[in-house]
Figure 1 (cartoon, rainbow, N blue to C red):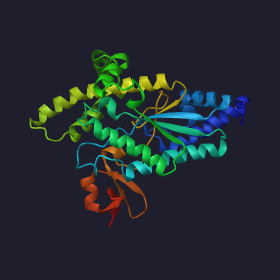
Figure 2 (figure 1 turned 90 degrees about the vertical axis):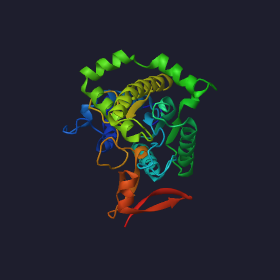
Figure 3 (figure 1 turned 45 degrees about the vertical axis):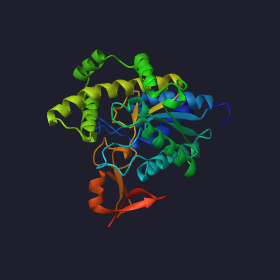
Figure 4 (figure 1 turned 90 degrees about the horizontal axis):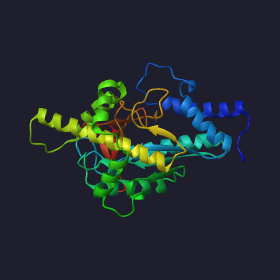
Length: 311
């Protein structure tokens, strides 16, 4: 498709077809909506820009930060079958697009673990290990439509604490601004509550009361959202021409398109907050590791815990 597509109707059809591939996997905060491509004018316009120019489509996906520090939820601090399946799924979407749009598509996975590692109590060396193994997994599995990007790619050789401080200072909204949004915007409130719940569930070794833990996690949740917003702004600056995906539930019509990686009973569950169970019907489901262990036997891959197989 050298030179791009010039006919407006052909451009619109191609953009709608690409978006139609994503819709069955949409992670929605408005699940009652029977969404069609027309509900996503921002994404259609972004896709049309690539198609008109005849360029490969670039999706950016912040996520894949690190494993939860709560060992009741995960099998360790390295990527496992949950990440492998998720990456394979994302690569497959791009391959499908390439089947009818010759320039193809790729997804840049913008690992965000370092940006808020200090707030979620995961050491930077564990985040490095996770990110390096994620990149190795992409190479090993031949997932040629995927690439990775993390905090190591910017601000040179500064220490992580300094990088976090600089990104926060330049891009993050103020806490006052964020508090106002939590009070007035339903989506921000939902995100704040979801992250607070995750922080509470992921905290290990806390010696205070339950109410003290919840207060502490509410405070940290603001910081996580600030840093996440800052990371999104940095990605937009580094990759201004892209279609933004999100692992969080999103409404139709907003800038971010929420995408579900694997089946889970909770719309907020991700491979890095859980383990994966291979069910008797062949499907894969994300569960807390301690729950999956009640339903299946542990399977190792390359000498490391990988997933659970139903028994």
